[in-house]
Amino acid sequence: MRGKSRLFGYIVSIALCTAALAFGGRRDEVTLVLIPREDASVRIGMDIANQFPSLLISYKIGAGGVASFHGWTGTEWVNVTEESFRNGGFFPQGKGPGSALIIEKQGAAFPSKLIPPESWCPAVYKITTTETRPLLHLLGRYYDFKFKEWEAFAEAYRQPLDSINPEGLNVSWYHRRLKDQKRSSNAVGAADLQYWIAVRHPMPIIEPPVEEEKAPAESTDESAPTETVKDPFAADAPAAVVLGADDADAAEKKKTGE
Image 1 (cartoon, helix red, strand yellow):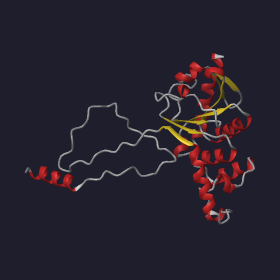
Image 2 (tube, rainbow, N blue to C red):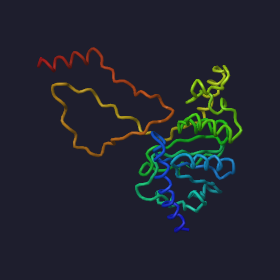
Image 3 (cartoon, helix red, strand yellow):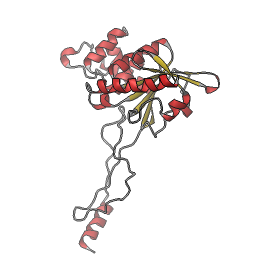
Image 4 (tube, one colour):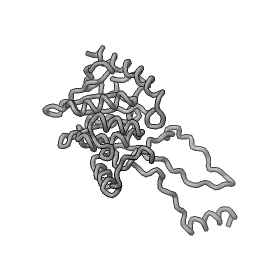
């Protein structure tokens, strides 16, 4: 089984390198997709893995919280031990995920002790439903589906386009088939956010303003993170740093040497 687990990692790494060439933005980011081992969820997970660079793992939580993991190589499911999952040994070194997306069945939470650690997975998100319509909606927002992808998933799962994409994301005016139901559609879209949880999301670093005449001494701390991950459901702009009148007066006095 260890040989198959190692083989799974190397096969996936080849598939990821190939798939990543076709996508940009989040599509370049390898996502660890964890899905409950049930037919409907597994089908959606495999369709996602066929479209986006993914490490697809199905899981089943037994009595006493004992977990069983299987990884998809692209052609077969192979066993992944709990130890290998915990330490990230199921993927080749340097080929780890940028984020994890855990799909939970309602009423069956994924054990917190098994949430991927920050050491090999910076960001972790959850979708807490396996119901087809809201699951496709939130997956589409996470991966920023293009129109053709929204259309393909709607057709494959026999869902109206405006039900899995109520906001009309990436639907150009000449492709719009949505009726004038903005009020109800927006309500549906907002309601689905109850199933979205950012378990661990690195916050952007906001640097304080510096004086133009003299820059502050460079820090010797090289451990500070240089890259952050954007929550796909968060606001685009970070909070502004606001200076009050007292701050401005103090800065002027310091500048003139008073």
